Length: 115
Image (cartoon, rainbow, N blue to C red; front, side, top):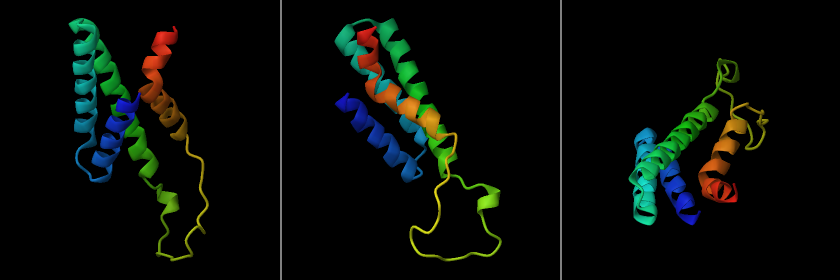
């Protein structure tokens, strides 16, 4: 679980630096697959789990980019400058899949062991 957090922070860093976050998501899945090969010895299982984790992180990056994007109605015609914290935070539907994906990425292995 701790390694999942470290790898997820690397994906965050790639997204903030505009360093192709989907490549970072693929690298996350590849590292997870390598770890599963080392610890389980089953290549097919490791390949499947690496693909699952890579796709979960790619989905996480996708929704994270959607949250960062501003709607056309949110952009004023003329720029206005206000005091920090004066803008109201609106709920976006992207927060729900982001939360679900984060729980699956960080605690997915614990959920699998409980089943």
